[in-house]
Length: 531
Picture 1: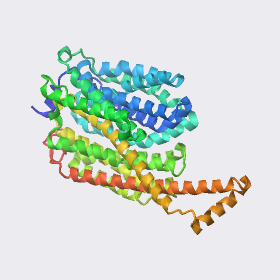
Picture 2 (picture 1 turned 45 degrees about the vertical axis):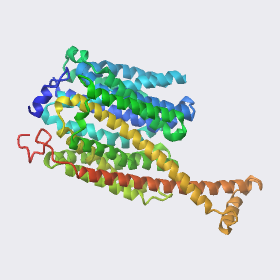
Picture 3 (picture 1 turned 45 degrees about the horizontal axis):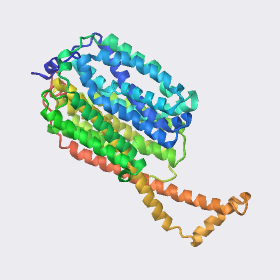
Picture 4 (picture 1 turned 90 degrees about the vertical axis):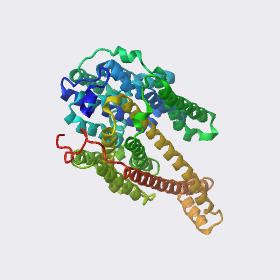
């Protein structure tokens, strides 16, 4: 059976070409971008949301954890839902409900209601991206697969960079409410495109009757608990917190139970052998390492500028837009052309090399760096975003069985969401521990009786003489302490950039182990003239 015919034979109502392919493509673009934009905007704007709702730091942290954990619970099962119910039912009506909740959240006054609405909001949001992959593989003509998967892949880097500018614009210019209210306009538009472009199909009662409910619950709840443990681990001190250890331990047990269930159940929902081939497994690990090395641009650069350079979010917009977003738009057609013409493994290696170079530039960081100093590394990160995830997805799909796209999409979502959280947790803990170490080391070199230290304190105290002889020395000590902390933070961020370099090197070594994919619709034209 050929790849194309196996797609046609895929079970469930999701199968079948789109009645109006252009509308189906529009649905792919809007749904994939909407999901990533909302996730990025929420994470970037969380401090502003805490202020708007008068939330404590702990309340804001649990709000963030609950929102993303909700996505993880349902995201792996969305592909199965599409197979059973069809794309129209999974995306159509939920898009309208999503718009209604988005409109309501800014008016919410109590924390429990805010938490509940954000959980439902995230459950609905989690359906958008997995369904996008099914639209591509089951509803679009084969000739459109590569550009559609390019859009699916580019949305990640695009939203990471443009999200910084959008948050600054909303919070400073039109109001934080538009972080949610934008969906009132966009989500129904997505639903309209789905109804216009995707045919209506009956519920697949055969697949529904044989549903692997246990497997879906075990994986979704287990991964959500692991995510919550990772998300709260840095804040609650990991092994020192019973809450964190309980979440991680119980989550690991449930995920283990999932793999046992898939091995013994008669009709497994997401059998592990879908990802056990060499190329697919290595490609998925490379995607995880891609997420980790891309932290140089998505986490380290904005966090340094906000916490050390003391800039506001609105001041970062031009850097990320002009040197992160626009280059991606320019490189995207080139990336599609290269994947059409040459082995995608070479494109993947080029993207990972760009990330490694961006991380190396970040290791030259000083506490005086501002937005202009990050321009070269941002350009390299933008190039890496354009040339890494897209060919990695092509490699994985080229080696997979399209007839089992439901299981493939389930694992894609676990890896996508899980690697993001693992990366953020690892990097946050790394920065915290390195900052503490450098603060201690620098503090030991600031001796109280040192002549240079005394001269500095005396000079600074004289600048604060207007506060009185009692307050001026204390303020001088505070200035010295802040300088030590600033240097410690800078050194920690330098080590953070080194960590992303090593992630990129590990990804390069693994990518070099990938073998050529079998001939199919994703093969370069030079090796597949019939494509």
